[in-house]
Amino acid sequence: MSAGLTVDTGYAVDPDALDAAAARLAALAADLGVVGLDLVSIAVDPAFAASVAFAPASAARVATAIGDLLVGRRTPVAAAATLAALAVEVETAALRYRVGDEIADAVVAVARRAVAQAVVEWAPEIAGATAVLVGADVLRHVGIAEYRVLAGAVAQVLRTGTVDLSELGADVGEEFAGVDDAVADDLRGVGRFLAAHPEVAQEVVATTPYLLEAAGFPRVDGVAGVAGALTALGAVAPVFRETGVAVRPTATARATPSRPPRGIAEVLDGVAHQSTGYEGQASVGGRLAPAGTPAPGGIRLERVTQADGGVAWVVEIPGTQTWTPVPAAGGTPMDLTTNLRAVAGEPTATADAVVQAMRQAGVGAGQPVMLAGHSQGGLTAAALAADPAVRAEFDVTHVVTAGSPIDGIDVPDSVEVLSLEHTGDLVPALDGETAAGSAHRTVVARDVGDDPRFAADIAQDPLKAHGWSAYIATAQLVDGSGDPALQGFRDSGSAFFDAPGARVETFDYYAERVEPAPAVASRVEPQRST
Image (cartoon, rainbow, N blue to C red; front, side):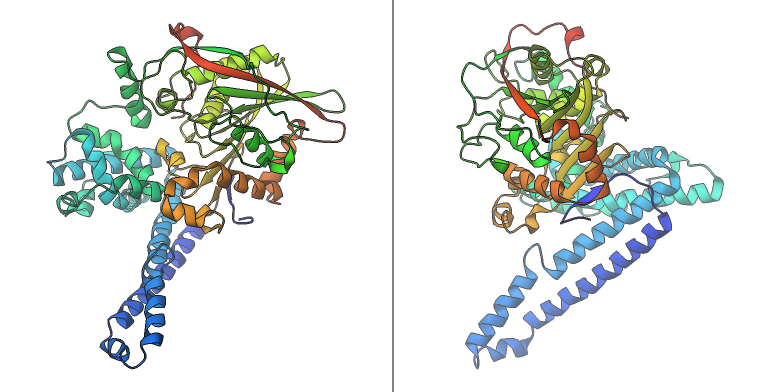
């Protein structure tokens, strides 16, 4: 933990220590729950109600204070729920260590399939994709279901030395008795609920393939399979249909940086200035002169030359710029079609555009490349880094992502990855997987809802946790952190950052969709993790 950041590098820990931590969290959750009940008892105490007539002003202040403690995300009850959920997650992590990741992944799949069967059984009137909506009300139980099934697997290992998946998950349906009552509730707030609770959204996404299968639809393989089924509609309808992409140098002058970036915040600030909707935002460190919002489809490369003549490249890839499901010639490739195709592990026009821009800029063999992006831009960066053909042509050494769902992409160990993810951001949860650090991937989590600069906006609109300003603020904390993993990432990327005698040149390109689509063999093919 550093300056409000949670840094995950995937190092192993003692499962007994996790057990103890989970027990302490559960005990603290119970204590907070008791505090919440005590507050409720005070609020409904007849003596308190009677005192209002004698001291109305004081009673009003007390009532307001009690109300603040009973309602909202920082109440004892809300904190108790959060800690209880965290206790389950920690205990589940301990179980995963005890059975190993491969067995744990198979067991979690069993749990999710059982959950899906239970949802459909308890709510038979929910058909097809509509079943996903039920997840907003019931899949808060999925964590508990996974924990129970994992615990059963551990018991089997201790008893027999093996795991029989057929014996697991049979009783998970008991967790979901009464789902039919939840279905009757008004579901109009589902979208807002999911935006405010990414951890639930992650489980909804992860369980969707099983929900569809349980509802009678053809089986698909995970979240990528669902996305692939949607992109397949392009064969019979104009939606999600891939096109070609043309890349050309921008015709209009753009604000250029005065020097190379000095850290992650300035790299992401450069990405932000390729995106739409960033007009009026001050540049981090004064590196960029004020400028209007660029047209959609912009990609910038910064060539950094150090005093010794060494050259490195920072490639800045913006996120989604249009949400239309109907791609058309002349439109930006940074659209919904690229989002779905990238999640499905399919080639994308945006990835093609980045490769074309790198070729046109003259990125040379052996020159280190950092790919940086926000949201879809980070997804594209990870997909490019995972593609053997791209790595054979370019020396991709670093990837920086902000708010990107990249957990299903198998970036090789030769690439250092830094992922910034806000705990209240829905978008990184859309891959249905929990971000996990490793020796070559550092995951930085932060609750920006605790930052007074953003708290009010996020309380009104939870999607603001995905916003640029919040991620750049997190990146500034990363730059100032003394955490060894973060320091190590910055040190390993020194070729991309400012130093005495270093200079920078920029190469700006504009990408747009064209017809027809090129042959599949020429497209960039991301590698998916299993």
